[in-house]
Image (cartoon, rainbow over all chains, first blue to last red; front, side, top):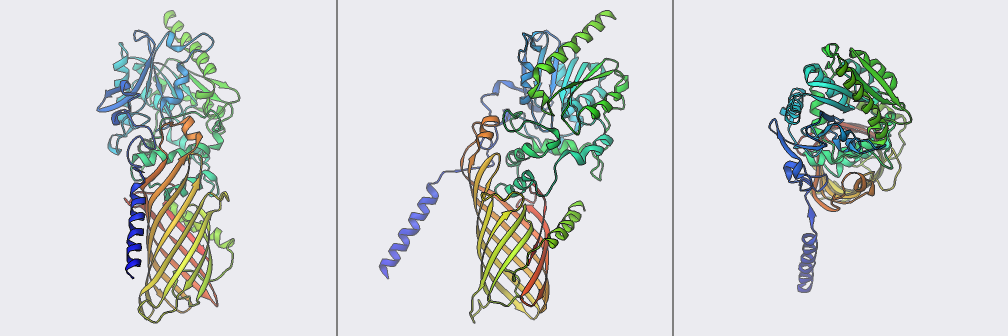
Length: 344
Length: 220
C-alpha cells in the first residue's frame, strides 16, 4: 500500500515536471504568429515609423525628396504595401525613383502600421491620414497616386474630396468605386462553396486559435488568402504576392463604414470625380473574371478623362507579377501629363 | 437572418444525404446499452462524425453514465490530417418525470494541415443538455464550452518563405475557447433516432469565430 502511494506521487511529480518543462508560446504576444508592428517594437523597420494623425504608421520612401511625390496605396482594406515594392525597382534601365519621390504607406491598422480599434478605422480618418501623408512629404501639398485594388478605390475616394491635391492617378485593377457596383459583383468575389478547402480550413482552424484579438485574427486570415478568390486568378503557389499581415479589424471596419444598416454597400466615391480634369490611367489584367477588363471599362466613365490599359496573362496580382509593364505604362502616363502641363 | 437561412438550408441538404445507423450519445431517451451514431453537419467545418457510446449499468446515484468516443473528419477534402477525436463521459444529473438534465465532459485531440501550418490541438470540453423527453421524441437546450489547452504548431515553408520567416513553431498555450448555444430535437423510431441540432457559436470572449458563427448537425 505504501509502495503504491510512493509510486503514484512519483508519477504525479514526473507528469507535472514534464508539463512545466515544456516551453509554451503566447499566441496573443506580438511577433509570434505575425510580425510586430512598428509601434510594438519591430526592430527591422523601426526607422520607418512615422507619427501621423495620432497614429504610428509604417512608411518607406525612395528617391530624391525634392522630386514630385508619388504615394502608393495598397489593397485590402487591410493588406499592406509589401507587394507593391517591386514598383520601386529598376527595369529596362528605368526606375520611377529616378524622377519621383516614392512614398509607400501602410494605412493605419495595416501591415506594420499600428493596430487600431473600430472608432478610428473609418473612411474619413483614412482620407485625413492621406492628406497629412501628402502634406508631410510634398512641398507643394500635391502628389500622384498609384493604387491597387482597394488602393484604387481609396485613391478615388481621396480625389473625390481633394481633387486639387492630386497631380494624377494610376488605378491598378481598382475595386468598385460605388456601393452599387460592389453589390453587383460581391457574389462573385469569394468562393463560398461549403465544401471548398479554404472555407473548411478556415472554419476548422477556429478550434486551434480563437479570433479574440488582433494577432490571432490577422494570422488566421492568411488561410483565406490562398484560395478564396479563384476568379481573381492570382499566382499563389510559387511567388505569391507577399504581405506582412492581413489587418482583419481594418478590413472589417473600413468596409462596414461604406455600408448601410442592412449591410449593403452604399458608398459613392464618384460624386465629384467629373470635376477632376487631369487624365487618369486604369490598368487591369486580362484574367480577372470579376473586376477585369469589362468591369474597369465601366469604371473609367466615372472620370472626365481616363484611359484603360490591359496587361495580358495576369490576374489581380499584376502589381506583383508584372512590374515591368506597370512601370512602363506609368512612366509613359506621367510623361504625358508632364507634357500637357508644359504645353498649357 | 442570413446565417439562420443558411443553417436551415444546410440541414435540409444533410438530411437528404444522411446515413442510417443507431442511437446517439447525449440523448437519454435512447435506452439501449450501446449505440453507434453518425453526425453530418457544420461544426465548425462541414464534417462527418462516427461515434460509439456505452451505457454503464449501475443502480446507485450515477445510474445513467454513458461513455463515448467519436472521430470526426471534414468532408470538404477527405484529408487524414484534419481530424477530431473526442472521448468522454456523460451523466444524467437530474431525471424527473419527463425532464432531464445531463452533463458531458470530454477530452479531445484535433489535427489540421493547411497552407500555413500543421497543428495538433489538445483540449477539454463540457456540454450541458436540458430538455423534455417523451418516449419517442425530445427537445432540449444545449450549452457547450470547448477549450483548447495547447496547440502544437509547425509552420509551412510557404508561410515562412513568402510571409513571415520568424514565425515561431512550438506549443502555444491557451490558444482557443469556443462557446456553443443551441437547440436540439430528436425522434425515436424503434432502435433508430434522428436528431437535429442547430445553434450559434461564439468565442470565449463572445466574439464571432472565424468561419461561420453557427453550427448544425444531423445525427442518426
